[in-house]
Image (cartoon, rainbow, N blue to C red; front, top):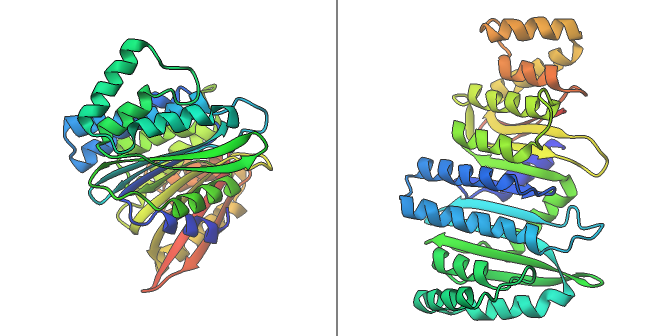
Amino acid sequence: MEVHHAYSLQRALVGSAFALLLGDPFRDAQTARLIEMAEAVAERQGLSKGMQARLAFVLVEAFQNIIRHRPQAEGDEGESSFLFRSVPGGQQVISRNPVADADLSALRAALDKVIGKSPEVLKALFLSVLQANASTAKGGAGLGLIEMARRSGHDPAFMLEPLDAGRHRFTLQAVLGEAVPWPMGSVAELFKAQQDLGLAAALHGDPSAAQLSAMVGLAHDPGPDGDPLHSCLLAATQLIEETMAERSGPVLLAVRRPVTGGRYVGVGATFAEAKAQGLMDSVGALGRASALGLQRRYRAALQGGDPAGAGLLELAVRSGGGLTAGTLPLENALSFVWLEARC
């Protein structure tokens, strides 16, 4: 990913204290990691146990809606997106996925049931649907949508757009607390950039160790020990922690799986110009080093004996295609730096 693309992505997420962006492939195993992320965000922001439980429910229900209700047809890969943002006053949870035209009437009926209804009406509606066992496997038969509206405390915002023959694109936004819904136009622009860049996962903010751990689990497909992607992700989180005192503003951690192939892990942040140039020089030197030289420097860095730091050196060692780096000059003698490794 070019540095200007990474900076544009970071700028698109400005206004959030924390943001998590997910794309295909979506897996059921990610659900537990989403709950971990909700717990980590709640701890960082000092949310009550009740707010944490409501947030976790809405996150999981919105995520599972993608898995349960999108058509399972060839060509759907890359058409779904998921966004979780912490913003002033609360949180936004936004999902997008294809919907078969045959399911539109059931979806619209489910939405009509919840829009504009009071919490008391929603609770009664939920119990009546539950008792009647009226839920269906597809088309948003209602229980999850009713509970999302009830627990969030707000009407969901949504958008339906024609996608292609036989399908529509469905975008659903739930807000919690006093958060203001994000304009759907901005949501659409972000999700288009995600699809164009092949983003499987991105984290934006000033992440805690618990948030970084949850991000690694969300972004990495379970596989054999020693998978280069997993190793690159761990190296990237170490680099983030090592540069915490030197960077200015939020950090961006991203995993890409472009249609052209390959898996990429990237880290971006803003630094003073001197530090940014130092990082560029370090990446250039690592690119000229031999494999043996990299291993020696990495072992030295583990003992605190290399100025490049263990995170950057491990990222270089684990990368199958070497590190790439770019800088973008900003105001006030600052520069945005983007480092990316093919893993």
